[in-house]
Image 1 (cartoon, rainbow, N blue to C red):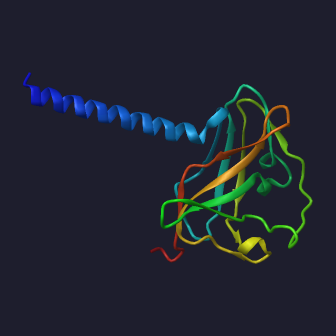
Image 2 (cartoon, rainbow, N blue to C red):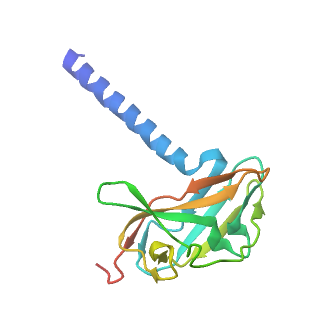
Length: 169
């Protein structure tokens, strides 16, 4: 085999190996500690409800508000990718002192179980009671849960999804 073809083969193989590692690392980021959180679709229209499924693939129970009478409080925040490709945090609940809430205790999600939430996407303007629909763009949600000992709050991110203009553009 000529040296140039052998070198080309090596470069292609090395590139595929690096890309494979990057893809696996990105997948692992969504399911750290055996927890996977995913939306039901990858594209939504503005104002469309989003179904979020929290799956506990770890060997132990975890606890989350997604399995409570106040499941929306499992959403720690929403993140929107800005024009410089960085994640910008947005409020998904009204913040103190503008609002106070009675929040149910987090519910148990046993090993191998899933829990779901139907979320009507709204963003609270600067943490006030005023809400707006999320602008068209690329998003992910941060979902909070407690470890099996109920001593530490952790965060799992959903897959990346887009919200498009409600006008079908």
